[in-house]
Each structure stands twice: as C-alpha cells, then as structure tokens.
Length: 480
Image (tube, rainbow, N blue to C red; front, side, top):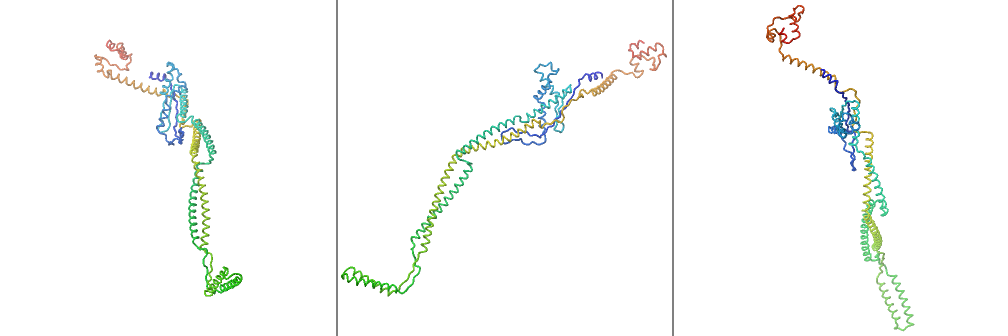
C-alpha cells in the first residue's frame, strides 16, 4: 500500500482539453471550370461516413500537425533538448499524434478531438491552434482560393476581345453596307422568290395576251366591216324619174352637140351610147321593183377590234411589267451574290462576337460566384462548425489518485490475504496436545492456560511459560 501511495504521489498530473466539430453539408463547393457547368451537383443533407473519415484524416495529417508544432513551439520543450535540432520537430509531431485522439461521436456527425498534456494551458492552446489551422485548411482544400482573380482576369480579357471584335464587325458592316446580314439575306431571298413568282405570272399573262391578240386579229381580218341590217321592196319610181331626167339631159346635150359636131364624132357616139344605156336602165327600172337594203357596222367586228385593242394594250403592259420585274430580279440576284461573297467574313466575325458575348456572360456569372465564395471564405463560412471550443481545464484527468489508492488498497488486502493463506497452508498447525507431542517428539508434562498469572508459578514454570509466549525456538524449549 505504501508503494501504491508513493506511486500515486509521484505520477505527474496530465490535463485533457476537448474540441468537438460538427460536419455539415450546407455549403456547396463550386467547380473551378471555364465550361457551362458552374456548380457541383447538390449533395444531400446527410453526411456520409466517408466524409467523417476524410475530415478525421485531415485533422491528423502530418502537414497540419507540423504547423501546429511550429506555431505552438512544442519542439522547444525541455524533453526534446537531447534530440538534434533537425529531429526535434519530428519528435514533437510524433508525440503530438500519440497524445491526440480523434474519434467520431456515436451516431452523430460530430468529431471529438482530445489532447492530453501536463500543462492545462498548453493542452487548450494546442487544440485551439489545431482548430484554427484546420479551419484555414478547409478554405484551401474545399474552397477555390484565387478563383475570383482568375475569372476577373478572364472577364477583362474577354471584354477587351469582344470590343475589338465588335469594332471589326462595325467596320465590316460600314464597308459592305450591311445592317444585319442574315436578316438582309432572308429578306432578299424572300423578295427574289416573290419576284420570280411575279415574273412567272407576268410571263403567263403576256403569253395569254399574245394569244388573245392573235386570235382577235384573225377574227377582225375575217369579218366584214358592215352587215345587212334591213331589206324591203318598193316601187322604183324615184329611180325612173331620176333616169328620165338624166335621159332628157343627155338628149339635150345630143341635140346641142349635133349642131356643133359631125355625125360620126366621138362625142356624139358617146352621148348616143349613154342615151341607150339610160333608156335600158329606165326600162329595167320600170319592169323591176326597187329593193331597199339597210347596212350597218358589223358588231362582231367592232367587238373583235375592241378586244384586239385591249389585248394589245394588255400585252404591251404585261411585257413592260415582265421586263421591269426581270430587271429587278436580276438586280436582287446580283445583290444576293454580293451578300454571299461577304457572308463568310461576316459569319466569322458574327460567330466570334456571339462566342465572346456568351463567354463574357459566363465569366461574369462565374466571377460573381467566385466573389461570393471569397466572401464566404473571408467570413469563415464552412461545413465544419465548432460545437465545443477547447478551454483550460484545471482538473487533472490523470492520474486519478483516489481510484489508484482504492485499487491499491484492494490490491494490498488481496495480496496480504493471499500471503496469509499461502503461509497457513505451507506450515504445520498445532491444535491439540497430540499435535504438539508429534511436532516436538517429547511428551507433554504440563499444560498451562494463557490466562495463568506469572506470580502463581515457580521460577522454572515461569521461564517455560515466557519462552512459549515469545515463540522461542524449539532448541530453547528443549533446553528448558
């Protein structure tokens, strides 16, 4: 028991500091990519065992522990003074890893970190430094430091390239008199299609008018200019009177010519012939009734001529319209050819402008995301929350002296009882006078009670009694 007591007093006191960290899935880590995907797939709120194991490995990583040793100057303790200077940090890191206990709490997302040290202030300082450096490493490992500057530089370079491309596009449009090439080409193609359709329709109308003109011309040439509109039979009295008057005049002229010319002259013979013809006509008129016939313009001829004029005018108009549409179609086709010639350069510039515009929007979005991430990093927002910060605990956790003393007492009693039992079983026991005679090998002469007073005995009996009380050796008993 004395040894246990000394051990309990000599053992140095050790103090334990505690740190509890909660692992969450509240902050998503963005993907550092220049593609369209800007965010990692959303993770579930449940924290997996692999995530807990990962964070435990990060807490006990060699680099992190070396930084803790350096910042807390554990390698300058006296117990490492016998190590070479270049081995002190490794020895302190090794001892720190041994004294550090990292374990997950039962059925929870909490990681418990404990550290044992002979100084309570040092234990709390080491865990505080470990927590601080671990939180900083979270920003490096799970965050994207420098992404804001990276995407900001990309945004500026893309914006400069876009301004250059837009200037080139404006110059190209001004040189080739373009406003919006795709819209112009589309409008021009639609206009050409309409012109082609109009030219086809106009040519069809021209052919129609030409055929109608030829048809009406043939009809007009074959039709008589007048047609009989009315016919009646009347007495031929007016004709007879007119012929009679003519005959009288011819006869008078004959009588007058006979006085001037010879009977065989031509004038007389002509007048005689006229007189005979007139007399024959009078005779015929008197014997034949007069037939009165009324004539008028042919309406079919008039209609044909009217339609002919109309068709000729229509043909001339349609021909002029076709010529105009054909010329306009040719000009539009030439303009389309010019647009096609400048289409390759325009398409390349337009493609570059659109690509740079989309990239600029993407980089602006990523710059905003990176800025938010940087602000979160500066605000120390992470998926690791401190549930219980390390504090200085002045109550030693080792050694538990009360427990050691209790266990020492129990152990001492058990050991003592064991020794007594062993001695009891290893030496002969004398319970009766016969056992004593057998043990001594001599007969018993006298048995005295323990309560016998010494004054009641003589000198010899007194000496024997005292020797027996003192457990004198057997040889002394035999001597007595």
